[in-house]
Amino acid sequence: MSWDIVIGLEVHVELSTRSKIFCGCPTDFGAAPNTQCCPICIGMPGALPVLNEKVLEYAVKAGLALDCEIQRNNQFDRKHYFYPDLPKAYQNSQLYLPYCKDGHVDLTLSSGETKRIRIRGIHMEEDAGKLIHSPAGDCTYLDYNRGCVPLIEIVSQPDMCSAEEAVAYVSHIKSTLEYLEVSDCQMQEGSLRADVNLSVKPGGSEELGTRTEMKNLNSFRAIERAIAFEAERHIAILEDGGAVKQETRRWDDNKGQSFAMRSKENAQDYRYFPDPDLPPLVVEDAFIERLRANLPEFAAAKAARFVAECGLNPTDAATITADKTIAALFEDTAALAKSAKEVSAWMLGDMMYHMSDRGMDSGALQIKPAAFAAFVGAVTDGQINRTAGKKVFEYVFDGGDDVAGYIAEHGLLQISDDGAIGAAVDKVLAANEKAVAEYREGKTKAFGFLVGQVMKDLQGKGNPGQINAMLKEKLEEV
Ligand code: ADP
Ligand code: MG
Ligand code: ZN
Image: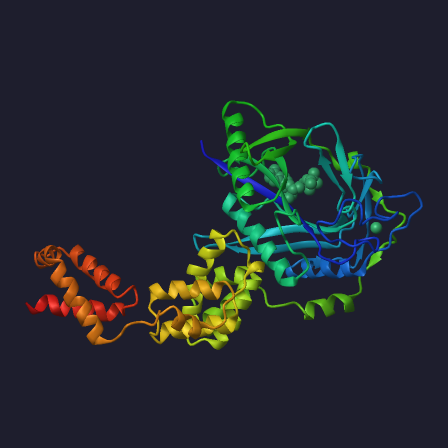
């Protein structure tokens, strides 16, 4: 029997406003514990919250960018539960009248197909504090710095049916919010995290199966692995004649397994009610329209423009524009460089390689567009060949800005002089009679070997086209 996987995601994103959602405390990550708190954000009785207008602005921008309808009238509700990281014993959230409804994201999948994922809604809420369990296991510390940090929660419809789609959906949201500059979206710091709701149903069936929810996944890899594991777990239970229990589960990325945490609570367990300290919120049209008019160009539009203006292929353009910083680097460099395609080729090849090799994200890139453009010029003009290019590129990657100086200092200028190349070819032919004989017997592999030897003799700086031509010529001569 075949099974369909059904996935709905709840994505939590910390907004990067300078102060918290209901008080003036700073939101900086990594400050000493409990140094960024006040009576409001630790819930002292009688302290009164006031909504930070910047939070509303960031949240509305996110809603517009995800094609949602902004609700003119919305309100905050108290969601009650007891947990040590929540000193008020309720979280300010939005249940009855969230500020955003009915959006969508259009994904381009690896098959080339596009697929629309509907967004049910987005609401604003406050984050909770953090529990830090002592390594000795004898106590737990509480850090309330994160309490009252603004969050939005983006809730999808159960429209995804594979890990690929879930990852593409989260990537799209991450890229969009980065372009908007409303969140740093650092998954490893928890500023973007996803809850994965998953169920399976018999292939083609209309009726949804019972779902489980895995909380707080904070990397793409974790999302992918958690989906694979959980889908398999559901299918095994069902094929065994059992029933999946609706529950909240914890994904343990080290063990590669999910574990039951608690049976799923219902909305009524939280005893939601409108927060009497926060008046209903009326969002004015003028406010929304001002934000709409100032939305930036997002990844998909930018990619389409790079295809049209720079001749990139759509896949390369999509990769480059997924990350705002990388897209800007491409655009700034291409404006100065002789060949935009060459810029993109070095970015997708050597630049991505060094980034992943060093575990860097785009924020740490040091490349200067002018130097990068000069480097591309040196390659396209034939001043340096690709082998030397790799070395020079690494210099540019590390922030170097004197490309010509670096090439000269390291003697990397390409050798295109017929005399020098001819001499190297003669030398190699004389020293490698066996390979020459093999070539004449029709073994083409021997030719590659000889090219390599000539290049080696020229210390990697020979013009490969000329080496090829001259070797061929001399091999045919005799
Ligand atoms: P709750 O309010 O209890 O968290 P919701 O019905 O609001 O539950 O759904 C939460 C998330 O779970 C949504 O993203 C939704 O798309 C997803 N979801 C709901 N039902 C299913 C299901 N049967 N299979 C997979 N995902 C589901
Ligand atoms: Mg939920
Ligand atoms: Zn505070």
